[in-house]
Length: 362
Image (cartoon, rainbow, N blue to C red):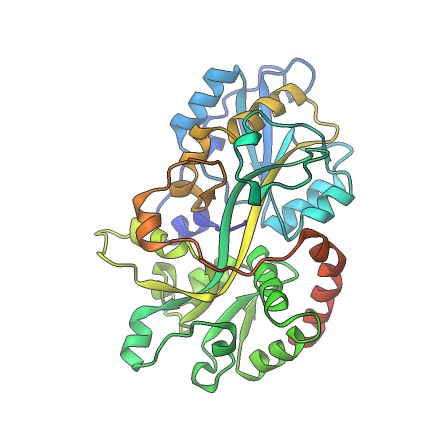
């Protein structure tokens, strides 16, 4: 989120390849995305993934060729987009989530555009409705995942809540991502702030630190190298049965397995979830704003919304969009996720991350 969701990395970790729009962008008949270009360029984090037939549908419907530039983790991609806003790499940016949205808006990253179909976005995901600088695209829950087999073997009940994670029974079992460099890491930090409040989250993290929490830079390392429950972690002989990931990670483990198991090998501690929402926006100074508008219209539409779950492992935000059976069975959305007002995130995020860094990493 990004919500994510990071399924492209997960697929590679399982020895598979996820189809990306990069492969179908075709030639640029104008040498760039300027002037009368028939190419529209999307800048995204490295978890962008979409079906080839959906890309083809967009290109046929709009008359534009789609080019995708993947630019690292969500936090890195947002920061780079801000630094290059006067001469942007593309026309549309996708992948800024509610944890970083204020940074993008305050730095003038986007220009206003109300995408066609945005009136079909579920009300709880709408933001910036007076200026329409971003379009909600997807949502997902950052949650602690657990390795079912490990806990069954140890005859230990998996944790369910934030409080549980600090109990001695779960010492040296949890791996989390760096809140300063990782979108799910930041989401988990905000979840703890929502749970324990401005005055309590630091004491909670002291308990986690005393309980042996391990911090790594990003999701790929945490999930595919440190977490014993993932396919990648099994190959790496990982020894941490708890990881900060997503509620949609269990269905990914089922879908990419061969043969597919009847149940997911991993579970979700629902009392640890924080809801992320990802947005896309028309970049300020975009060289092909009309192409960018067409792309935003498409991303808000039913075809793209219903394609996302099994490619990026996120939930659609469009009212009435169908969700795959695997999501309903193996990765349902959290019933009571932690949330936080975007203004509160904006006011506190940077200081919280600074305090977290000093407290946990030093």
